[in-house]
Amino acid sequence: MPTMNVQTLTLRALLFLGLWQTGRRSLASAPKLQHPPEKIAVVGAGIGGAAAAFYLRQEFGDGVKIDVFEPGAVGGRLATVKVGDHEYEMGGTVIHPLNLHMKHFIEKLGLSPKKDVPSKMAIFDGNEIVFQESDWFIVNFLRMLWQYGFNFLRMQMWVESIMDKFMRIYQYQQYGYSFSSVDRLLHAMGGDGFLTLMNQTLEETMIAEGFSQNFLNDIVAPITRVNYGQTLRIHGFVGAVSVAGADSGLWSVDGGNKRVCSGLLYHSKSELIPARVTSISFTHRPSKMGPTNSFYELNYVGESGSAHSLYDIVVIATPLHQGKSDITFSGFSPPIPSHYPGRYQQTVSTMVHGLLNMSYLGTTESAEGFTASDILTTELEGSVIFSLSSVDPVHIPEGYKRPPASQRKVWRLFSPQSLSQEQLQNIFVSWDSVSETRWLAYPLYRLPYRKSPPFILHDRLYYLNAVEWAASAMEMSAISARNLALLAHHHWHGQVDKIDQEDLHTRLRGEL
Ligand SMILES: Cc1cc2nc3c(=O)[nH]c(=O)nc-3n(C[C@H](O)[C@H](O)[C@H](O)COP(=O)(O)OP(=O)(O)OC[C@H]3O[C@@H](n4cnc5c(N)ncnc54)[C@H](O)[C@@H]3O)c2cc1C
Image: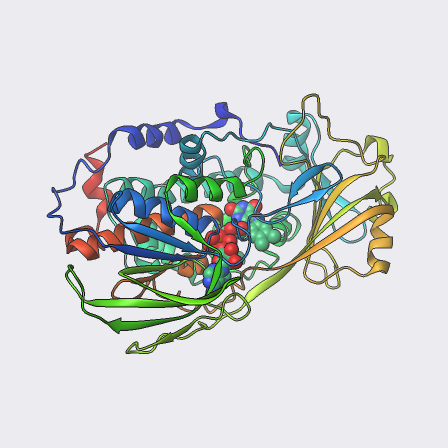
C-alpha cells in the first residue's frame, strides 16, 4: 500500500497537529501533586507497552523507576523477517495518515516514514480477478463508477465522518482527560453512535448507510479479510477501522515499525527486564512514604531464574486471553481471571521469495504487465488465503523499483491456516525460500458484542489491551497507553475531575 505523502494530510489533521504543539492542558486546573510513585511496572514491550512507558514517564516525571517486562522480542506483533538481504514487515504494517500518536512518536524519536512505492490493489474471487486498479486516476474513477456507482465515494465520506469523531480523542488527551472503560472512551469520541456500531455487524451498518450488497461482497469483505481475517459479520466499529485501513496515504516506519517500540523504551528511560511475568499479587507491606502501603508483587521468570519485585502501579500491555499470556492474579477481591472470555483469531503470515503462478489468478495478463501489489480475496468458502501482497523491504534502497510479477520477488500471504506444499505449488511456479509466522493476531469480533474487558483491574492495576475489543491497531494501543498513563496519574493524585467527564466535545469546542 502507498506510504505517507505529507501533502495528503488534511486541514483537519494540521489543525490537530497545531493543537499538539500549543494546547497542552490549558484547561487543566493546577494539580495538587503528592509525591510520585516510586516504581511502576509495564508487562509487555509491544507498541502498547512501549507507549505506556513513554506516557507514564511524561505523566510522573523523572523520579519514578519504570520497569518493562518482555520475554520475547521488543515490538511484539510488530516484527520483521529477513528474506535474502532485506527485512520485511510480517505483522502490523500500515499506519493511517491521521494516526497522530504514531506520527508524533516518529517525530519525537527522529525516525521517518518509509519511502513511498506506489501500489495497486486487485480483487480475486477464487477464479479470476474481479477488480483491478489502474495506473490512471481517471480510469480507476470510471471503472469504480461503472461497477459500483457512487459506493466508493460514499465509503470515503462514511469513513471521514467516523474519523472526524475518532480524532476527538487527541484533543481530550491533550487536555489531560481520561476514561475508565473502553465504552466510556468510545462514547466520549462518538456518542451513542459509536456504541451502536459496536452492537451491529459491519454489514448491517453499511447496508443501513445505503451501500449495495454487491459492493460489500466484492470490495468491503476483501478489505475485512486482509485487515482482520474475518467476515462482514465483525462489529461496525472495527469494521470502520478496517475500511479506514484501505484509505490512501497509509505509511510505515522506515527501517521497520518495531523501531518505534525500542525508541520509546529508550526515550522513556525505563529498564527492560527480559522476563515473563507469571503472577501478580496484591500485598500489604510497610512503606517509607506514600499514600498507601499496599503494593503489587510481580513474580517473573527470565534466563537467570525467577524473581519478584514490588510496584506501586502496574500496566498490563499484553492480551489476557487464552494462548496470549498466562498470568495468575492472587489476593484480589473480586478475583481477576487469567483469561477473559473471547478468542483471538489465528492469521498465518507466510513470506515466499518466488515466482507467482499467473494461472492461479485466472488471468490472461502477462506476468510482465501484472503490477497489482495487493491482491485481496472475496469471502469464498474454501478460499485458502486472505490476501497475497508483493512486499517491499522495510528500508527502500536508492533507485528501488518493485519488480513485476514475471520476476522472483517477496510475497506475503495471510491465511487462516498454514499453507501446505500443494497449496503453495498452486500459487507459485517455484520458490527459493518460505518462512511462516503464526499469529494470534487480533480478537474474533463476533456479535453479540460482549462488553470489553476493564481498563481498571484493581486500584492501580491497569489493562491496556482491553481496547483491542473495540479494534486492534497500533494506534489503538497507543491511545490506550496514553489513556492509562493519564488515568494512573489522576488516580494517584486524586484528580477525579479529569476522569470520565461527560460532553467534553462541546465543552472543549470553545478552546480551539
Ligand atoms: C499479521 C498482523 C497484521 C496486522 N496489521 C496491522 C496493520 O497493518 N496496522 C495496524 O495498525 N495494526 C495491525 N495489526 C495489529 C497490531 O499489530 C496490534 O494491534 C499491535 O501491534 C498490538 O500491540 P500491543 O503492544 O498492544 O500487543 P503485542 O504487540 O502483542 O505486545 C504484547 C507483548 O507482551 C509480551 N508478553 C506476553 N505475555 C507476557 C508476560 N506474561 N510477561 C511479560 N510480557 C509478556 C509479548 O511477548 C508481546 O511482546 C496487525 C497484527 C497482525 C498480527
